Image (cartoon, rainbow, N blue to C red; front, side, top):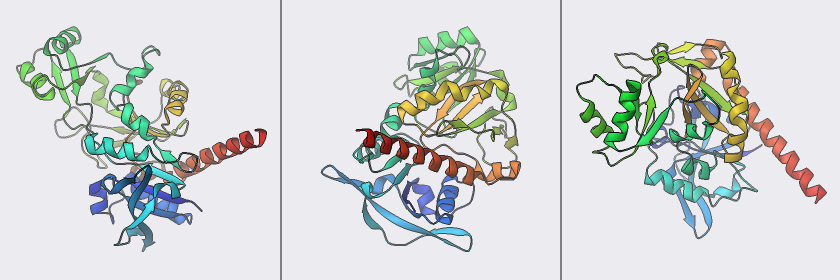
Length: 332
């Protein structure tokens, strides 16, 4: 039995007896069904005593096939947990950054942290794709800038672009822009906060009209189970989580090669869970903060229990690392 802590988002904590659309629901539920002790907390409930990390944590339990939390928090040392998932949603603001600082004090010889707090702090979800530039055609052309002239030059080179804030999620603040738009200056000024804040500016990929795919990466493997996220309500991008916007899809031969291109780098950076958004075989974003795995929808589409597959993979990975560590200690 493992002692597990899942750091969830504040809104999820407030409505913890929540719906099954949330990935964290399935993680808690599956771990509890396996007989583990599972606690939850939020990033604002983490703290340090000198160099020792603690949290105000709430035990969870299953009742009538749903999960619930106890009403009173208990102070727990973060080093007493076997596994800690840090799954607080963006924005990646100062409160988020401070939480990663606290998590960096965890003794990694005792506790497995998913994902590594240093990676979460340093590997921006939008910019991280640029660490894979060496693979031709794997990512769309892009720039990162707040400068009006540089962004306009990129716009007029490609004709159509997508502008993305670097610290948000779920399409918040993302704009499509073409070189014939009558509001070019206004849109660029708005997204860059009057040219003060750098944004990711990507080449527009026309295939987005068919939606983008969410590829699910867990501990070295991209699963064959994935969904296509399609736009609704006159938007060019996915921004509503419902059955009409999530469609069955399969990995293409090109997408199947992505696993071998990214897994060594992910392993090196301490990234064990990721959601890769892909259009036409190109990675447009790598979600590592709190990737949504659409477990409820994938279960329905593929008639599987995806939460079991994911947790099996994580436990197998941990067992392999533990075996390797013991072998090294014995040789030493």
